[in-house]
Amino acid sequence: MSVTTSPSGPSGPVADPFEHIGLLYDTPDAYAEGCAAFLRRALDAGQPAMVAVPGGNGDLIRSRLGGAASRVVFADMAVAGRNPGRIIPRVLLDFARRHSGQRVWIIGEPIWAGRSEVEYPACAAHEALINAAFAGRDAAILCPYDTAALGARAVEDSYRTHPVMAEADRTWASGLYADPLDTAAMFDQPLPTPPLTAYQRTFQTVGELEDVRSFTAGLARSAGLPDSRVERAVLAVNEVATNAFEHTAGGCTITVWTETATLVYQIDDAGHFVEPMAGRIPPVDLQSRGHGLILVNELSDLVRRHDHAAGTTTRLHFVLG
Image (cartoon, rainbow, N blue to C red; front, side):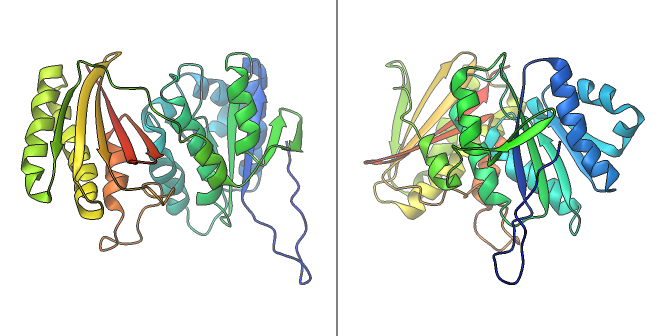
């Protein structure tokens, strides 16, 4: 598999070294060969390579690479990327940072058949935002899509989020690829209405943050969230509520319920989320703002956010058990 970028020169713009490729496959053999062909480009050039794919998919790639697999870093995307919001900062950019000054090659598979309907918009938005996060970076990222197991919507969306599409033996430019921020905004979709049985409480000022934390912890324990994870929920909800108090008028309303073995906290405020890359790009130093939303993504199993006429709705999901 190879991709040709447009030439650059003194009379024209410099070509972006970043490649973002959507790999379409329908059999395990096509998957393994498409991924291995991509990785051989990195290994032949002596450049760092990483594979972040769910479960046993990594074994398919290892077997195709043989002994060369020892030169590739492997991670389970079902763990590292359980929350799609943490993939860019904690998987992709982290690997690039650790290999600063070198071209990095990454296989990232954030969308697979086991992903739920509630997760999908966050996954698709992530795929679009990769293009903004890596613009101008010396990197290549390949994202596999199982056309036999995924629905037609996911396959069509892959054309929107990847400038280049591929199969094991060929590549072509996507005719649907568009501005990544505009594409990501397509997946900012209205969220389902909370159940009537949900708990709800409104907090008006930053002075009530201790009450926010107590409310969050009490409902987490009542729902059966393991003690080791109660603090994670408290920290995440506290951070979103703090942002609401600092940047909006009227405080925030927190609604809490459980669904499909998941504890959900919804935080509603009157502000608008205007920076789509917030929580995706780590701040350059400890003094810079922006660490809080990175932390929220790190602590939560899923973050969904919807900007609407009345403000912003943020949902934090924590898997029970």
